[in-house]
Length: 422
Image (cartoon, rainbow, N blue to C red; front, side, top):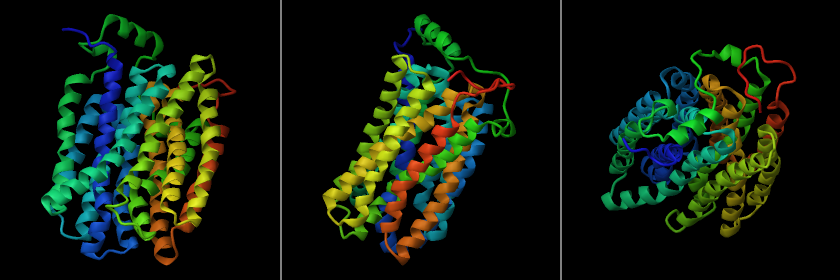
């Protein structure tokens, strides 16, 4: 069978596409949010309960899904995950009220949770540290691309069919198309029938082979590096879900029409896409110039974490262009940092622990986002978005400090042998 040149980047492209579809499915509800709020007469607090239903299940499955992926393997685990959440996305078209939306969003969260742990594990299996920043940026940029595509696709389908119900059928079907390519193309490097001898030799030289032993959460939680990754991501990720879940509603609260402001809604997602590659590119460039992996990753955080303070003026203006530009700057900076947070599990830990650590960090982020989603709904119903925007610009600086302080090479020998030399 003929080999595929640079096969690992085709694998990276598959992970990117999975994340795009993952985000289109979850953003379908958010893009339809203003329409559904009007039809069903929901308050912001009502809408928040639907988001919380998704987030609760997603939080559970980030941790459980990480173990699920480590045990079943990347290929089989992600296949089950995508098939399940695509079916649930399509079935959402049947719901008739807020209780149904809560149930289907909970089930969607269960299915989507393993995506990021699986992608982290796949990049650790296929990419060396000097390329991993680019690979993580590629698949994580799918969240921004999916978020940017969703409002155009969703509103087109809504106006085409004249109802919101067929929209869920259209977006939910995308995952089943992706599964065909995934099952045809994804295998471990050592088992892949279409990898060249040269690429396999490169990967085997640069990438640690998969370990047979499994690692439990108890062992991982003894490491300060685990806590740095978990707590740091828990503090920074709620910003992204402020944009992904609430930005359309925020713009309407400022008096802007959704259809006429759709390009502005799109800009923060485009900025985040560019930020992913900026963060991954800078760190990979520094590693290529001889910097230690950990030092290169931390340098990116120290640049872009504090840059999110630039969002604060958005809390005090009603100028549409300025609001969109400030959210674009903050989203660019967030995404540069997020790429580093997602790369760290593969940088710091050996492959048999990568998905578990990634899943724990996703669970921490999910718990924090549950709390922030509830608070956003409550605060904006009683007051405004102003205190929410201020908090969203300050907390990422704390996240940067936590990760920079805790995720460092160990000063003592690692008795369990779970850490890489980073």
